[in-house]
Amino acid sequence: MSALLELDGVSRHFPQPRRGFGRRPVLRAVQDVSLQVAPGEVVGLVGESGSGKSTLGRVALGLLPATAGRVRFAGQDLAALRPRELRALRRQMQMVFQDPFASLNRSRSIGGAIAEVLKLHGLPHGTTEVAAALQRVGLEASDATRRPRQFSGGQRQRIAIARALAVQPRFLVADEPVSALDVSVQAGILRLLQEQRGALGLAMLFISHDLTVVEAMADRVLVLYLGRVMEAGPAAAIFAAPRHPYTAALLAAAPGSFRAKLDLQGEIPSPAAPPSGCVFRTRCPFAVAECTRVVPVLRNVEQRHAKACIRDDLAL
Image 1 (cartoon, rainbow, N blue to C red):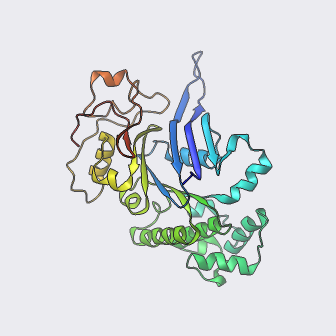
Image 2: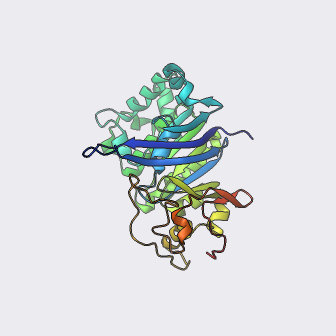
Image 3: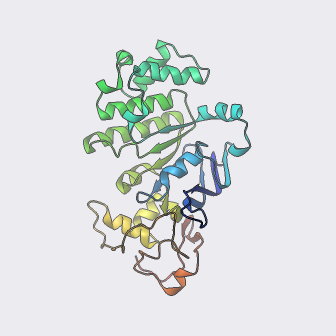
């Protein structure tokens, strides 16, 4: 099956203010990332805060241009599209943000917010279409006249999902969609996303730092650290037998994990000044001298399961 979304060697850098007369520093948020998402597939993107997950999600949608590399959606190079062509393609590519209250206009009714999106894409946007969008996510048609402040956090996230799905996209970036919600509410939102995936044949890039959530949602997983992919493969394989020390440490630190703890040294470095060689080496308990010189490439260790680590002798 051909990929719906393709990222080929994508990097995204942010120039920083110059201090003094030296070279202008650059924050390397994403560095040389390649991934594919097939129609109907869910790819999980995990890593600590500052790993580049949200930036990569925005680059995948064309909301941020790639500094290097190429992003294709349905075979079309986003960088080569004219603004009008890119706007037309956006109907197929939608996003759900972490904070639904911040992503909704507090002065507008939720029905007006959904109708606005439908109108923007040239679709019917009357009360019937708005009601259908709300009912799809478990809300009532009568809720259309209410403002975001009149809903709970879980309901507001359902509204944000309704707005994203109203145009019937093929691909959804879900950026930490349940991290701002109570644990008791999260399961309902995840179940809703799974139901809509089946109903619409929806492909997703599911971004989360919560490995339990990713395990429940994703078919495949990419593990990011300082903007680079440390490990990638089928979700079942990665959660059963991680091959990279960083992945093993994340899994061991998850609540309720029975894995032996793998302590990471220090704090995550700044992406404006990443370590030489392997970017993970300053925190890795298994680092050797060669790790300071070699940038490890992502290579297969099993079928469809890859890691970016020069050491093959690790028992994790």
